[in-house]
Image (cartoon, rainbow, N blue to C red; front, top):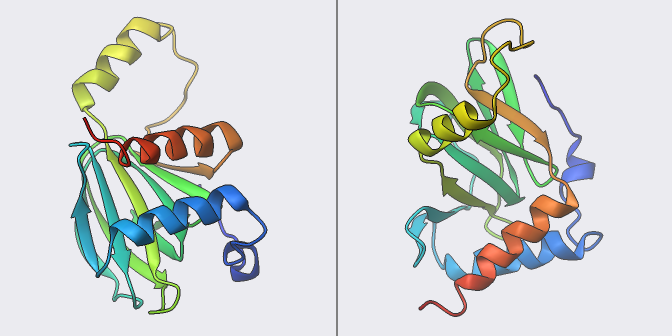
Length: 166
């Protein structure tokens, strides 16, 4: 799947209050560039202020929701774009090439990463899967799709938990 969105579609935060809220929350909790741990073990926040070089990296199983800026991941010649319009799911540990392609000091790349426990996912699949799968081919382990309202609402509720850690 090769999802491409024009930069004019990706950058306007004012047109989407929920996206603006997510970006503001991440920016507040990431005062400088880097990966920032949170009070929720599986949740980390990322801030990068300049585009990066295309670099080989190992992606662990996780959900990545970008609030601002954009990034690409390339696996076996297939490029996955994730940005405020598209999220990325990594279902297995994979060697990929990653690159932040849109980031400035004024509008840094801001991302929420939620680690996924592969054993939990395997259990869910085993419990709910139809044993006669109609899926043809091999799943590459990466999936990018449009961010929708229920997902954004859930992400904002998760971020709200950081305001009242127990």
